[in-house]
Length: 136
Image 1 (cartoon, rainbow, N blue to C red):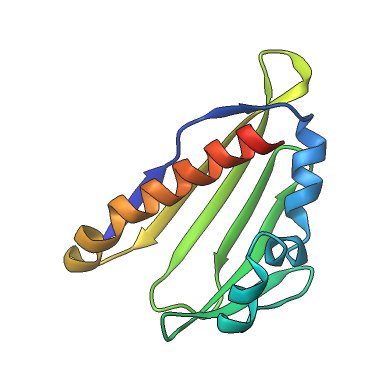
Image 2 (image 1 turned 180 degrees about the horizontal axis):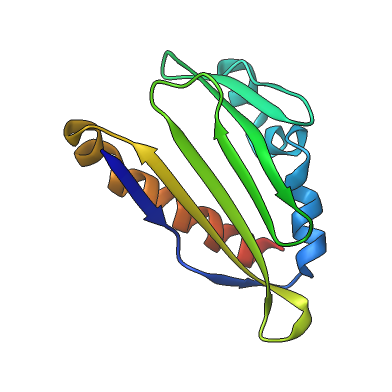
């Protein structure tokens, strides 16, 4: 069953191209994980993908679309279920130094997985957007 989850939108005090460039190289994602967790999750990353072991599950994500300064699309690359993630970097109301940032997730979840994960995914997306808006 296809499940669509959209984060809230937040205004980030960086130009869209600056945020886009930070997320386009998948190696940068490993810097967001605390040092002690990097070893625990056995994180491995290159420009196009990140792989980790999370709660015993091998999870991989790869970049599948890069639209400069506007959108980056990711897809599962060895995960327990199929999913895509799209990050949006839109100019905030014509202000060139601010970005309207949001994230969308589309996942193939059975009913049980949807019940267990939907709210956790929503919470994680919103927390990421809030954290980015507050810390950049």
